[in-house]
Length: 113
Image (cartoon, rainbow, N blue to C red; front, side):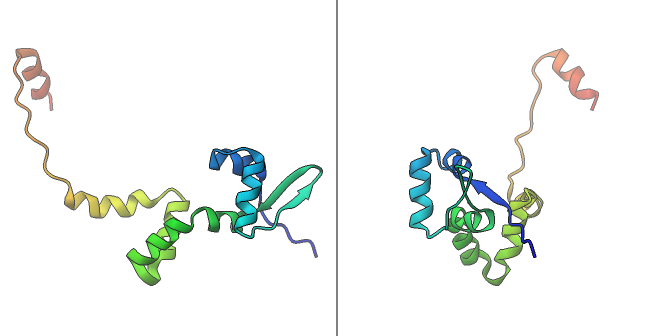
């Protein structure tokens, strides 16, 4: 049985970490991520890398949301967290200051709305 796991190459990790390839390898080794090699292209398993890369975020979400942290983490990964933030942030936003137009053209423009 062939099992496929999504990969992330060391060169991509180096770009994300803003380091050189050698430093990215050391970063992975310090976090006990096994580095596989495919024709001179070292890589690690993406799921394991994501877990290590987002460790601080995960800790923060665990403190903030307890057992519900995984739902928030999933929304962040899917780039949909703004939907949660929008509901709570909308209540906290102050009302904008009212704009008083000074010129006649600005008054005419605002009257269109």
